[in-house]
Image: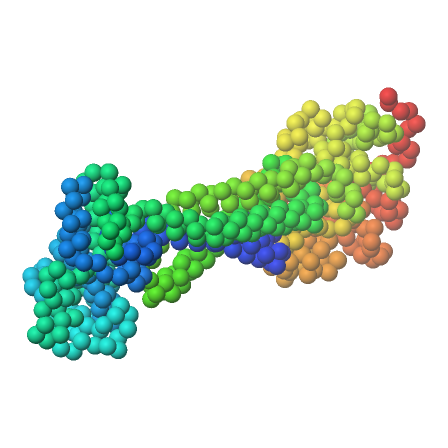
Length: 394
Length: 219
C-alpha cells in the first residue's frame, strides 16, 4: 500500500474521465512534439545541404526554385546557362570556388548529376566502395540510391531522359558504377554522380560534337572569397540570362512562409494542452468531491493533511505524466508515418527519432502544470474538516 | 483508559456552548454513551478521538493529554489508539476489502500482514469477500468489513458510532455481541455511542447525555 497505489486505483475507478484527460494531453503534447521534430528535421536538412554555399548561379527565373533545384534537388531547374558565361563568374576575384552542376537525366527517379570532384569534397562524404570518377559514363552512387535501386560496384545501366520520367531511355549509352558513397544525410545520398562530359555525351547525337562555346550547364554552386561578391556578382551578370540567388535568404523566406502554418498548428496544440489541464483539474476536483468522506476516513485512521494533499497531487501527476508519455509515443508514430510518405516524394531522410531537449522541456512543463492543476483540489483536501465531513455524510 | 473532565465545546463563536458530563472509563471496560439526536453525542465522540478540540476541559487517553497535542500528533495518536466503527460504513471505493484493511497499517507506517487480515475477515464471516470491492457487499457485510477495519491495527479503544441504528432487534444483538467479543479478544476498551434504547440495559457503565447545550453564550 502506498499513496501512489491508491492514486493509481482511484484513477482506475473513473476510467472514462481518466481516459479523456489522457487522450487530450496526449494529443496536445503529441502535436507540439511532432511540430518540434518536423522543424528540427527541416532546419537540419536545410543547414546540412547549404553548408558554406554562399551563392547559386543559374538561369533566370524564381530564385527559390533555383535553390530548391540545385541545392536540394527537389524542384525542376530554371533552365541552362552557357558554360563560358559561368566560367567568367567562377574566375571572378571575389569568388573562392565554383562547383558546376549539369543534369537532365534520371535513373529510376534518381537524378544523374554531372559535376566535379569538388562536389563530393564539399560535403565531405566518405567512400563506401570503389573510386572517384575518372572518365565519362562512370558513375558514383549515393547511399539512398544504392539502397533503393540495388546498384553496386561494376553494375551497368541506361539513363532516362528527364528528371522523373522513365519512359525515354537512352539505350545507346551505358553507365558503369565505379564507386558508392556512405550515407551523409545530405542531398548526395539521393544522387548518381558523374562528370559533366557524361551529361553532354548522353545528349549528343552520334558523330556530333557540341562546340565549346555552345556548351551548357545547369548551375554553379559558389563559395565567396569576399563578402562583396553578394553585391557585385549580380551586376556583372546583368546582361546575361543568368542570376545568382542566396540559399540562406531563400530558405529563410520559405520557412517564414510555412512558419505561419506552423504557428497556427502550435496555437491549436497549446489550446488542446490547455483544455487537457482543465480536464485534469476537473477530474481531480471531481474525485475530491465524490470522495470527501473517504479522505476524512483516512484522517480518522491516522492520515495527515499532507498525506491527502500528496494523494491528489499524485493523481494529477500520474495523469499528466501518462498523457505526456503517450503524446511522445504518438509524435514518434506520427513522424514515422510522415517519414514514409515524404521519403518517397522528397527523398529526404527523417530517421532520427531521439528525444529533443525541447521535448524534455515540454514533458517537464506538462507534468509540472498537471501537478499545479491538482494542487488546487489538493489544497481543499488539506483543509477538509474531518469531523464535519463525517457528520454530513450521514 | 479514558478520562474527560469539564469538557466544553463551541463550534463557532456565537453558537451555543456545549457542556459534557465527565467520562471515566478504565481499560478493557465497556461504556455506553446514550443520547437523543442533537444531544451532542457525535460531538463528544469526535472530541474523544481528537477530531475536535474542546474549548475548555481535559481529555486524557491512555494517560496522554489530547488537548496539548499538535494536530499532526493527534492524527497519528488517533490512528494508533482508536478504531472507529461508523454508522454507515464507508471505504476507499477503488480498493478491495482486503486492501482497505491495509490502509491503517500504511498510514501508521507499520507492516501489514494479509494473512492476519484474512483471518480477521474469516472470523467476521466475510472471508470470501476479501477481494471484492466494498460496494459489492451487502449492507450487513459492509458493516462487518467496517468492524474489521476498526480492529485490524489492534487499537486500545474501539469507538462505535450508532452501530445498530438501522438494524432489527435480532441483528442489533448480534452486532453488539460481535463488537463486544472482538474488543475482548483484543483487550480493547469498547465505547458505543447511540440513541438506541435497546442497548440501555446491556451495559452497567453508561452515560446519558441530556442538556449538553447550556444557555450561557461565551462572548
